[in-house]
Image 1: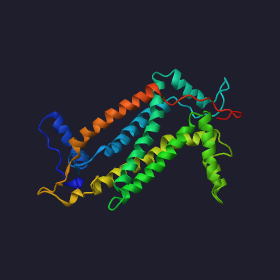
Image 2: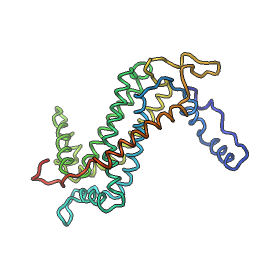
Image 3: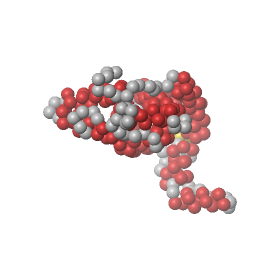
Image 4: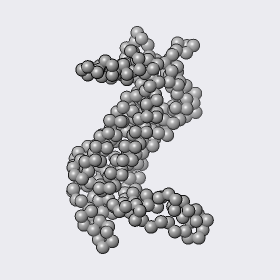
Length: 299
């Protein structure tokens, strides 16, 4: 891929909008980024069904961020009991579901989106294994992808505790206790993760801060690195053809086509189908329910 600095800056057509775009592009590499990563980024011609899932993962990421922002507006990470004897965290989730306008939809989109995230990421990873996307020169893309997957597992695990229901509490109890099996450092490590000797208010607040701030920042950085590394060496394809080896007189790959508009339009088809399935699950079979955490109750 050509360096972004090689692309010509936007030239105004004399209109107010054109002058504004020229002023903006002279101070920010908007045109270079658009051409380098979309309109003049060449991808192989033979992408198939398996290449939908990278863009779908980005779509689900946006869904999770947007719905998560609205959930944080009303959620309270507090394990203490309210006047009705119900944990405040659990009660805040019930408040979102029952009293916040469209809160039930936002929460179901977020919980269903968490499961959908792993479905599309697993299929995305399967495609990488199927077509050897981990081989030279794409080793770093695979490394970044693996780190993204590990961050997703941490993000999902911490988010699972936040409703402070039966399954979330005991799930955290079991998973955190697994770390205590590590020789020498296991017990101190599990206490450090919990923030206490038992899963409690300190654990809930710690997981909340990591879930909404720390891990998402790391995740976004890794995703940016993943995409930049991909666009530096080029995309793999089912036939294993390196499109950069055969170029025309203008330096464009003969076996490639611009990502935009060809693959952006193709991805829209996948997005529409995904959103249909996603909506059916959200409206007719969403995740949800559970009882408040109780010391004498097991899942």
